[in-house]
Length: 90
Figure (cartoon, rainbow, N blue to C red):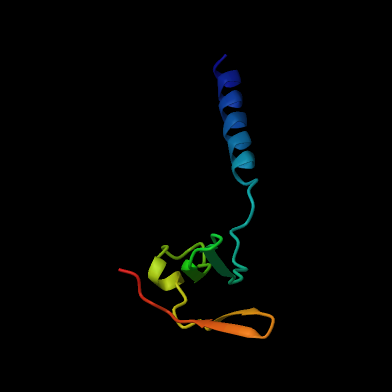
């Protein structure tokens, strides 16, 4: 009885060890992407355009680090081109 209980315990720990090692490796192949976020409403001025970049999974998320404030944004329609300027929001 005691020997049977030990076998079950050892088998249980071996099973837990085997299942615990079945996971994906930590992703280290980070690729930075740019994200443009805006809300366009007909007959309204364009407001709150945000250009941000993705951050690595291992860094703490900081909105100021993700924000791209020196981007040059040009909206064009036909021959008309409109350059948007960065304005720091309060």
